Figure 1: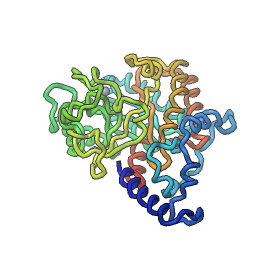
Figure 2 (figure 1 turned 180 degrees about the vertical axis):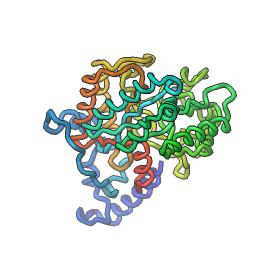
Figure 3 (figure 1 turned 90 degrees about the vertical axis):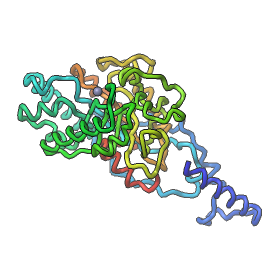
Figure 4 (figure 1 turned 30 degrees about the vertical axis):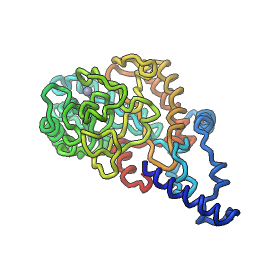
Length: 382
Ligand SMILES: [Zn+2]
């Protein structure tokens, strides 16, 4: 939207310059270079295919991340483009929901999960990959069984936040959601982990306000159920009167291509409208890791195993993600993994190798949810 005004201003400038003088000096840096603009027609599919087909040399050994690239300075040409140019760097993570267990009560269950987590982390680290852990019952497990695996993993470069599952029950309020968020943050704090991001906050109540009161400034994995909090006049096409968060489980925005740029939200009544003055950042959901093929086919993602079909689905989706990226903005995407049955480690490594092709090509960069949020807030071009 902010581009619209710039385009209008620049269009006027261009028209004025054309009428004032018929020749625009190509090298005059202060003047819009229309030839360059014409030559700079975006070719998202071509770029994405290139990114997909030209991974750097395949080496059997995982490789380290490339050096951080400075974001290109905005130019008159870039301001004139309104569509994503398909040339962005996508900040990428795996968001792992540590939920649905009885780790606070059962030591054996907790110890098994802690060891699984360590094994996954070791594999991810071989690829320079960063996980984002959104934790629930495992927090009590760490406290009760005195194994602080969450702090250990955060010290190893992964991020630890909250999976709240607050807001979906009847009668949920701003107060009840904020209370849950504050309690969970305090428990994590007692484990030495300070956090300010959460998922599982979708509600009919004003969940954006609840996040602010609950010390949460970044929200991930938002689902359609969260559309309930909107002013009814803002409900998008596709909204249905969802019974609960599990009924309204589809990621929002509905179109995958619309889930590649984060935005700031001011309030639960209008959160789908980006507000530069908002204080809570939404980093939209990506695609399920182990239910990718089901999600792409529009099927319900149950607890599912990671299969070859899921990896094929990711192979199909990544060029679309890159095509929806924009070199002038902050781009984000992630795999959502609800930690259930143990995954096949060979397939998980195959998936990591697929992502690594994009990392080596420079179009994906591993980054946790809080790192994405920091990058967004510090970016002058958002
Ligand atoms: Zn949940």
